[in-house]
Amino acid sequence: MQKLVQGVHNFQKEIFGSRRAYFERLVRGQNPLALFITCSDSRINPNLLTQADPGDLFILRNAGNLIPPHSATPTGEAATIEFAVAALGVRDIIVCGHSHCGAMNGLLAPEELGDLPALRGWLAHAEATRRIMREKYGHLAGEELLTATVEENVLVQLEHLRTHPAVAAALASRQLTLHGWVYKFETGGVFEFDPNDGQFVPLGGAQERTSVIPAASRRAEPFI
Image 1 (cartoon, one colour):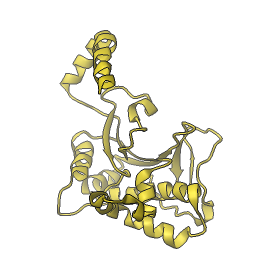
Image 2 (cartoon, rainbow, N blue to C red):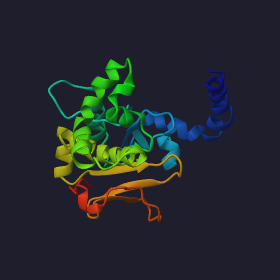
Image 3 (spheres, rainbow, N blue to C red):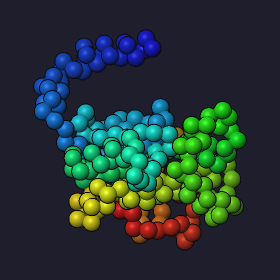
Image 4 (cartoon, one colour):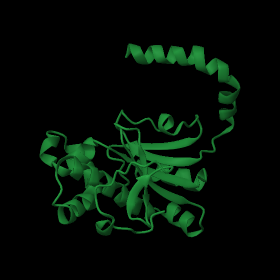
């Protein structure tokens, strides 16, 4: 805790003062560039990863970067998505999974969740991911299986995202673009799903690839 307290003091002393005018302008309101949906994992920092300033990203985080499909029962995720799209007018939504995801590991091996009934219930929003992995990718194991699960889960959550009325309306009027990303802790690489290639390809043209599934076996719906 002391590290966090010291961090606040350092921010106030070394950063806020030199950018006071910028922070004061934030009082007038927000106009974020994108809604960034990612995992609660402490190893992901969306602002650091994208080098975004305060006010640039509207961020939604939860275990496994899951998006419950639209329903008659409001959720925090639905409220956040609706506000970002309908009130703030974001033009891009990014769903970003990550390597070595504990939530996806729990989806594959629920017996490892132990006494975590809330987490097991929450992962029901990734049931489609679990079934896809069981039915299509039984030949994979270990890290390859987990990597493929992370990728497929991003695609499943993009499908869920499309069920939300504000998102559907913005997509229909071509006011919104959806993006599926995967971030690799160990290399710093970020990969975006290319619906034409049916693969996660390096963001910005780097040479490394993350997908372990041949393009011919991957679904290639036009998510973006």
